[in-house]
Amino acid sequence: MKKIEEMIKKQVYDLLEKEEIKCFIGFEKGQLPFYSPPAFITEAGQIERLIWDDFCGANLSKYLLNAVVKPGEKIGLAAKGCDSRGILRLIQDNQVKRENLIILGVPCRGMKDVSNLTVEDNFNQLPTMEKCLACTNPNPVIYDFLLDEKVEANPQKRFLKVEEVEKLTLDDKYAFWSGEFEKCIRCYACRNICPACNCRSCYLEQHRVGWHGKAVELAENANYILTRAIHVAGRCIECGECERVCPAELSLSTINKKIIKDINSLFGEYNAGVNLEDKQPLCYYHSDDPDEFR
Image (cartoon, rainbow, N blue to C red):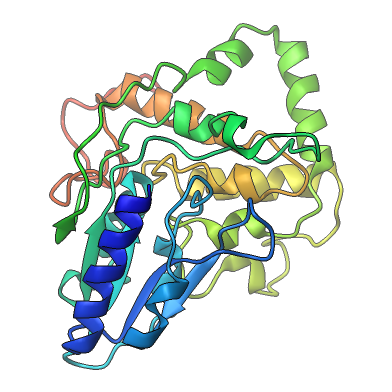
């Protein structure tokens, strides 16, 4: 990964020196050895802050929503497969413009899982993040510069949890999801991190009676979680960020992937944020669409 880090630094230095970008969004080392938060580099002299290691698991694409770009200015970004799908999703939703971006694509071999880290753990022996094991697109799908050789996808666990829940009885499914929804503390971290949750004005901030209750209890939690899941249906890029940042450790990816699995079953195989020209199956009507609801 040191090789990739040096390539990122060199590329970013050149882009900033030539004033081809206003800012670069990458990663830097945090206060802890297993913590690599986002970095925002605006000057060539700051490039030594940039790193690339096993803990660059966050999806950087959502930060583009807050980028203020004047005519002629561009933003640089380091993009793994999931980051690039998030970028493409934002472009398709008309939230960012492709011509305002310079994307450094980095094929991803999986990031380390620190969710159950103990003081005795060896950082080099930490397991790979579960979301990475289920990744269908470890290689960037959109980029200006590719900084490493592409890797082979092996998403054997993509729908593993979904299939486990599908095998439960109705009563057991209700008990499982009720237990999940009850844990929610309504911090909205899942919404804030999600590239597909990119509305500039969210219904959660609207105070119209009947739209959404504020009580942290089972019915309201279920209403929020399921409303958000349906909102991103056909647009979820499977980056797993919602589940990664959830302080209550809800199985949010399982909900999203169940919807993806059903969409694929009904309308054919579709992966959101992979092809700029693809049309979302829930946004267009075709005469041969299934109509089992009649």
